[in-house]
Length: 372
Image (tube, rainbow, N blue to C red; front, top):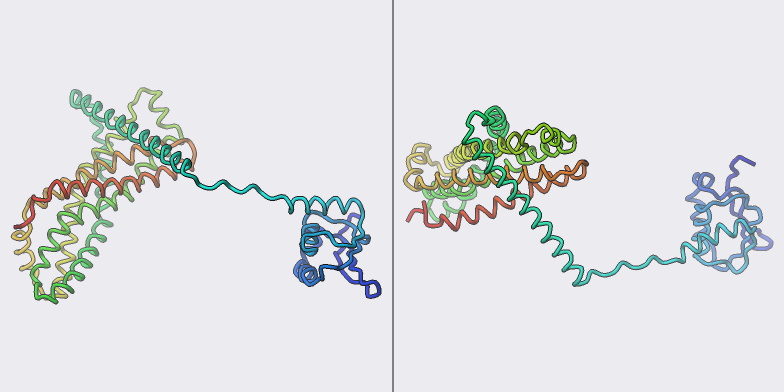
């Protein structure tokens, strides 16, 4: 009796009664599940049933049979009490309706908004606390110059600056080529080919260069900073530093902030130069403009103030990206889900802040460096 008997379903030709036999269990039904489902689906609703030959039935078989019965008891059915209990349990579960989820009301919207405001307030307070602690660390280092973490600063400067040069150069070159190509299509229609220098110079040096580098650095270096600090939180290395009396901001945060603040203006200058070179190559191909004319015209149509605006943007963006990255890195809880969510939030927040601050720069410097 311990073996499995194949399930069967057949009709008695004399009485017209459908008879079940064998084991109606998941294991027994699996090999011929498709054919049995097809047979049950084709049965009439007024069929009569005899389950006396049924040896075993589980919840899977009962669910399959209940569906074949169109979710109601047949008018005529013969079965044992134990089998009836199993089928009744399935029928009862099928009849029970789950409560409908309440709709999203105005109160829910207000609660969600309030919760978001409280979370935002916590982030602002923690960010200001981190910034204040960094200011105190800088004051301490100004009084004790021998304690500057120069080794950590140089290591971070290499990672966020030198290692980022290839990718920023590639993207900058392609952006310069695309911008020059699209601009030349319009300028040729009006015979204003020479203004390609104005468009590329102002657009890249003043705007695209700093923003483009900031987005790349936020995705590359910002996420790496957050992940590094987050892993140290997960492995409790930061707690170990605190237990030994070592300032986490002085040894972990400050070198990253200083390195990225110093590296960003240099990366902006580097990327802007490569982007201008790409635009110059594209202008040479599309408009026949010589390199000499492009290089000679660029200083005349783009005031030097735009270079300083771009460098100032780079320094400001680098400071903000590093602060945001370290802020989210120190908020990581000792679990992998918190690490991934904070790393994502760090990149998104840094890019958003960069765009907002760039808009402030655009308004504040709207009358500076723009040719009359």
